[in-house]
Length: 264
Length: 175
Image 1 (cartoon, rainbow over the protein chains, first blue to last red):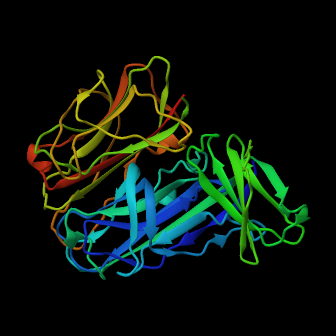
Image 2: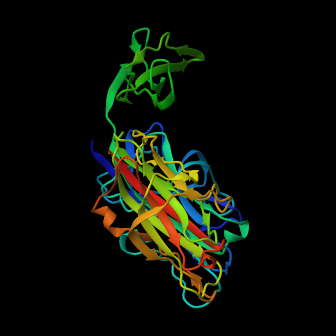
Image 3: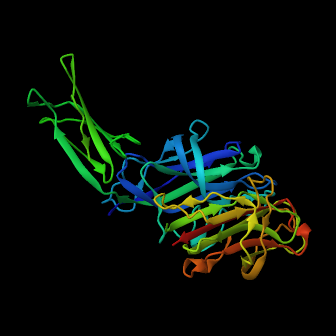
């Protein structure tokens, strides 16, 4: 297909949370997305201000499910002619009020963070060398696609041996992520909402997408309010099915379509 | 099915033994060829060691490994599934938890590197990643019944105490 976005996000400074598990960052490709996300770079740095004589935390990149919370960070564009899919969302934890909640699944990659055994002399946030420095995914991403399909996510998570190893306020972490979005093949569906043969403006058309006509993994693709002329259009991923449901209220009378055919 | 996959060990504690098998990846499927794309080893040693630091060695195992903890395999693309006969083993059952010894004998060493040690426990502690840099351009291939072993070889058991914390990641292609 075609690359429709190339860019990335940077986190604000993320403080430790005095807990053994902390999700720092998430990148979600929402199930309603029309793109595959191809992760090109994922970078983690940390500056630890206080001495830690115990083992440093492991920082893990994982696939993940059920993500919520955090703050949404704006997406920077490498090319302003390209636009990111709105369903691709990057979050970071932000202070105590906005932790990310997520369930990690398979671990993709991990590395140790940083620590100062005693707080003396210079401290460096650089680990590794050359193109591998501070990376949170293997150095193969330029020729091997790490893919987040619609409905998939990854997270960067701190796993500490003890709560004191992930100190609040003095562990200062950042995450940077760069990705491309690759358009997914779709087919078009459309229609016109009418009432007594007259086009209806202001009708609500809910487009549902699913794996099959049994509505396996059904989700709302989008909700459309019809303009003058009553027309609506949407797109469904190739290989899936769509259905459209219509509601309309006028003068206190509520209407709905009498049938909702599967659109394959 | 073809694809790219990765796996990571749990945090592995030193065993005060030498050698100490950290990690293996094996292929027992005649129909699949595994090409290793990256191996990364890190160490955080929290105790002073004034003797020479352990060497990390990568070799072909002399036989298919047994034991250890079978690690989950992550997919670079969920449209591709890893072959069930590609098995990755780690030497701890959880992060810093119970050891699960991998039984494997090293063959000819392919690559080795010192990791790190604290001569005195002062200042910042870095864990520079050790990895085979040539893998990005040259294929290291595992055919049927071949395995790769990542092993700590210390000059004395006391050089690899339980205050050594190891991490190993591997990335590979299946075709």
